[in-house]
Amino acid sequence: MMKHICLLIVLIYTLNSCKSDSLENINNTSTLEEEVIKLSPNRPNLNISILIDLSDRINPKKYPNPAMNYFERDLGYIHSIVQSFEWHVRNKRSLKINDHIQLYIDPEPADNDLNEKINSLNITFTKNNAKRELIKRTSTLYDSISNGIYKSAIKDGNYIGSDIWGFFKTNVKDFCIQKDYRNILIILTDGYLYHRDSKLKEKNLSSYLTPQDIRRFKLNKSDWKDRIQNQGFGFIAARNDLEELEVLVLGINPDAKNPYEQDVIIQYWSDWLTKMNVKGFELKTANLPANMDKIIKEYILNKSI
Image 1 (tube, rainbow, N blue to C red):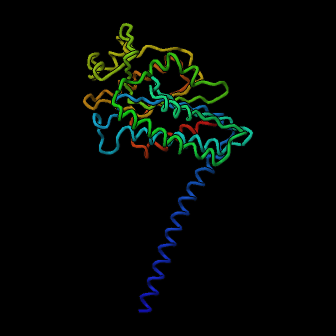
Image 2 (image 1 turned 135 degrees about the vertical axis):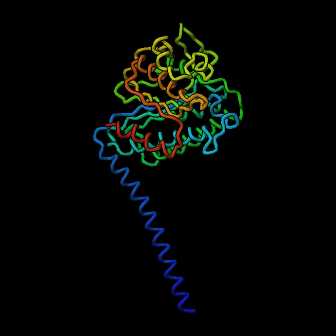
Image 3 (image 1 turned 30 degrees about the vertical axis):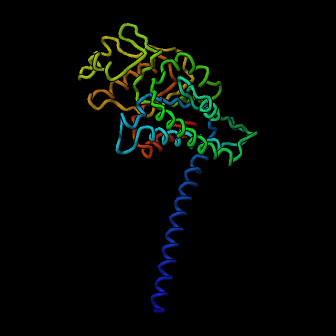
């Protein structure tokens, strides 16, 4: 009996030791990751804007996905974005902190309470308020309010589209660009553009693109690229003065019925952002947040040098 008790004590001690080692490894990994960030010299001030597309692409009934719903992927992307922002601020010298993050929906919601919550996500840290605990609360605040935004939109069910084209035309310069900052606009969208109040067309250029348009323009065949180049398909350039803006598009989700859909969407966006003289851009498909986390953090942190 005494022998069994001794064996049990040894087993419990061993398991606790393994657990402690595992937790220590996790903590060491986190610390190491932050130490690596600390080694990045003279990072610029960040001005991050997040624009979310609340069209029916987030409808879990219309576009179900057994791996993870698309609105949940968005929430995961937002968490990675804001966590990157936190790490950036926490690892700067206090005197150099002057960083900003904000979130936009276009058109703005009719719900006044929701608008107040969105306004609370307009956050600036300077040397006067950059307390460690306050900085660390940023992702918690974003997680909570973003979750409420998506659930409210899904519950309402009135998907009128997202006016991304109109946002570039009217607001992007004023809202998303500040002098002496690294200005990053991160757009969460499936890559299609449509809003009932932004339906412009100039020959084969337009302010919108839907799966139906791609089929109608006969861009669902192997000669899609030739047709775009020879017949001038694409988005109308909303402006041409965005030299101080970087754009990261997350969540591109092409219609699976057309094997060339993703290529067409990326070509449209690439041509559009190039015509608007965007400083740099990357376009990413709707992968799981766990797979996108590293990509997002590397984009925000490793390029902030």
